[in-house]
Amino acid sequence: MPSFQIDETISQLYNSIAEQYGTPSYVYHEFQLEKNLSALKNLFKNLPVNWLYAMKANDNPFLLKIISLAGFGFDTVSFEEVLLASKFTTGRKIFYTENNMTDVEMHAAIKAGITLNIGSLTRLKKFAEAAPNSECSIRIKPDIGDGHHSKVVTGNMDSKFGIRIDKIEEAVRLAKEHNVKITGIHAHIGSGIKQPQNLLNAIEKMLELALLVPDLKSVNFGGGLPIPYKLDENSFNLEEFEAITSPMLKKFLAHHPDVKFMFEPGRFIIGNAGVLLAQVNTVKDQGNKTYLGTDTGFNHLVRPVMYEAYHHIENVTRFDSKEKALYEIAGNICESGDIFASDRELAVTKENDLIAFRDTGAYGMTMASPYNRRAFPAEILIEKDGTYQQIRKRETAEEMIEDLLKKTGFTF
Image 1 (cartoon, one colour):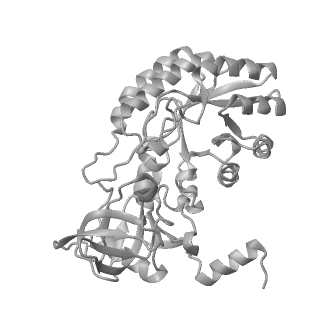
Image 2 (cartoon, rainbow, N blue to C red):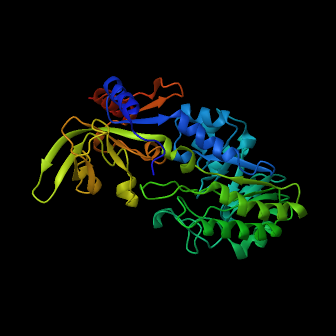
Image 3 (spheres, rainbow, N blue to C red):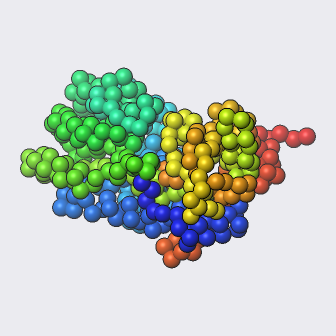
C-alpha cells in the first residue's frame, strides 16, 4: 500500500510543480523521509546499533543532508560515494564496501581514513601490504540470499560478493602477518528482502561467525529491508523485527560488551518518499491494447525493465475518477521493451494528463541515464510546510549537446 494518498491537496501540488518545472520530474516528500528515519531511530534504543544510509539508493545532496542531520552515517560502494558522503559527515561514519576495487581507489580510501570493508582475500592482502598496522572490515558470503529479483540477491552460494565462510580464519591470519586487525565483519544478503526469516537467519549466522574474529569491534548486517510496492502488500513489521532480533544481540553483548552493530537500509529510507511525475503525450488504440505514451522512459526509471519491478501508477489529473480502463503504459525511448506496465487499470486517461509512478525514491534517479540523448529529470523536494524547491535542475536539449561536445573535446 502506498505510504500516502494522492488527494486534492497533493494533486494540486503535483500539478503546480509540473507547471513550474515541467515533466518528467522526481518529487520527494520530506515528511515521509523523516517519518522513515524516525521509525528506524526508534528501534533498538538501548542497544549499540548504528544506522547507515545506503547512498546508492538516492544520492541527491539535499536528501543526504536531511539524512545526515537525523544522525545517520553512510554506506558507500565507490570512492566517488565516499567523497560525497565526506561532505556531510566525518570519516568514522562512512563505511566503504569495495567490490573489485582498483589500487588507486584503495589508496585513496586509506589516505582518507575511511573504514574499508574488503570482500576478497587478494584485496585484503594488497590492503595489508599497503597499510600495515591498520584496521579494516571484511565482507562475508553467508550462503543465505534473498531479494525482490535474482539480480539483487547478493549473499547466496554462487554470489560474486564476499569472502567464503571457510576462508575467514585464513583472512585473519593473512591480516595478522602485516599487523593489520580485522575489527569488523559484514554481510548483505540482498535488496528488497522477500522472506524476513532469511534476514534473521543471516543475523544469527553472522553472530556465530563473528567469534572467529579476535579483534572484533563491529558486526554489520547489511540492508535489504523491503517496502510494499503493490496495493495488497504489507509493510515490513519493524516492531516484530526488533522483538526477535534484540534478544540475539543482547545475548552476544553479554560476552562481547564492546561490539557495535550496524544496519544499512537505503530503499526503506527513501523509496516511498518519492514519485516520478510524467505527462501522457499519446493515447493510442493499437487494436488489442491501448497505449499511454509518456514523456519519460526506462532511461529515467529502469526498474520495471531491468527487474520486472512493479510500481503503482496513478492519474494525478483525475485522481478521484471512478471511470477506469486498462492500459499499456509506455515510455518515449526507442526500444520495444520500454514498457512500465501492462494491462494496468487507471482512471480513463486523456492526453496531457499528469501521472505519478509511486515509490520511486530509491533506485530511480541514481540508475538514470541519458540514453537516446535525453536529459535527466528535474528533482523537486516538497518540504514539511508544503512549500517546494527544485533540488536538481533539468538540462535543456541545447545544454545536453553542449556538455557532450565539451566533455569529448570535439570541435567543428
